[in-house]
Structure formats: C-alpha cells, structure tokens
Amino acid sequence: MAPAPIIKKHQKLMEIIFALFSEKLNECKNCEVLIEEDWKIDEKNVVRPDVSIVCNDSNPDFIAKTPKIIFEIVSPSTALKDENIKFRIYEKEGVKYYILIYPDTLIAKIFENQNFQYKKVGEFDVEEFTFDIDECKIDISFDDIFKSFR
Image (spheres, rainbow, N blue to C red):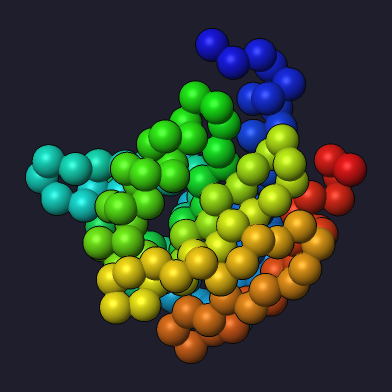
C-alpha cells in the first residue's frame, strides 16, 4: 500500500483537474468532468480513469461513450498499466487526448489521438494548452494544476 502523502497528492491533483475543467466546461453544455467513473468499453473490458471528460453520454450507470479526454495520475504502482495497457486501450478506442500526470516531477505528458495513433504533443509543467473537443476549446494552465505542490 502506498504511503498517505502520495495518496493525498494523487487525490488533490484529481480535485484540481476536476475543478479547472468544470469551470471551463460551462460553455460545453453536453460535456461533463468525471472522477474515477467506470468506462464500460464492451462486455469484457471496464476501466476506471482518474479523471475523464465525456460528451453526449446520458448513461446513468457508467461511461458508455468514449471519453474525449482522460487524465491518469501515474504512481510507481500504476506506471506500467497507465503507460502501456491503458495507453493502448485509449489509443485504440479513440480517446482524443490522453494526459499522464507525474506527481513526483510535476510534469504532464499530453498525447493526441490522430487516426487511432497517439502522437506526443509535449511535456508541460507551467505552460498552457488548448484542448479542442467537439464545439469547445478549453484552455488549461498546467501551472494552475501544479502550483500548489511547488
């Protein structure tokens, strides 16, 4: 089991990402931010992203449509799964943006799905990035995500 400070940092990062996107999604009426909700890909595959942004999904029980954006907060115990297994699943399923957050180094790696293949956009620590989903553009400052940990 991971020591409490890592768990607290993990939870705090999820809260910050949730709050920032919730505020920015006011103009995207069909999209919502979810924390640790099951995404039922098919009858055999269910994943639980740390934070996901889902649009036009009215299923009350689980995420039924492919999320537009997924954040995973990488810890030593989840790195293999986040960087490999989930990476390949999200890529194949067409998740537009996959963001790996590294709490120890305060770096975010952003990948954008282009024709079901992820291309690395870059590594961010203080920069701003514009996520373009459906009819919405969402500007997020990674400084706002990480500043309370510096």
